[in-house]
Length: 185
Image 1 (cartoon, helix red, strand yellow):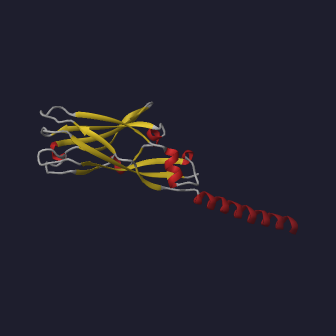
Image 2 (tube, one colour):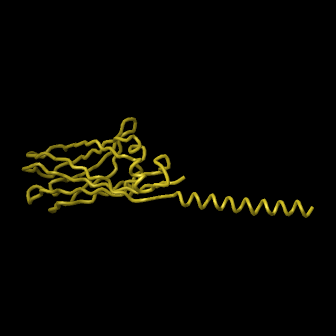
Image 3 (cartoon, one colour):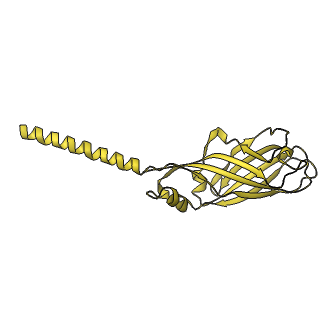
């Protein structure tokens, strides 16, 4: 009887140690990280007369395997659980008093990809009427999971703007996007 009890105790100790080791391995293979994507540049053409709005779409390609290899080399792209967009900023390089972000009443950013519906991910519904060359556009809900879009390898960002007043020249806009990757086994 003592032999059976000893075997059971040994088995429980071994199983507990094994499960604890597995959990430590899983912890070591979790690699959440922040990532700033390559900046996107679009040109808003001169808007001599205020109209309904303007839509500019640009295709984006992200090499997910390279991003994971650079930031979490112990796991692969297959281990990505979420890719949360956490921030978007827009900047003008060639602004002046008559041509700056003040000219835009609303700014909206949407994302789309083949087989995945378009989704508004950030918006300023009532941009203040003050001179500005850089803005942070609030992300919907503070963060949006873009994994279904980024996993497509190529996806589109669409910038929708409604002018408050016309512009006399084109505006070169640099869009910066910031992400938090949730990665683990």
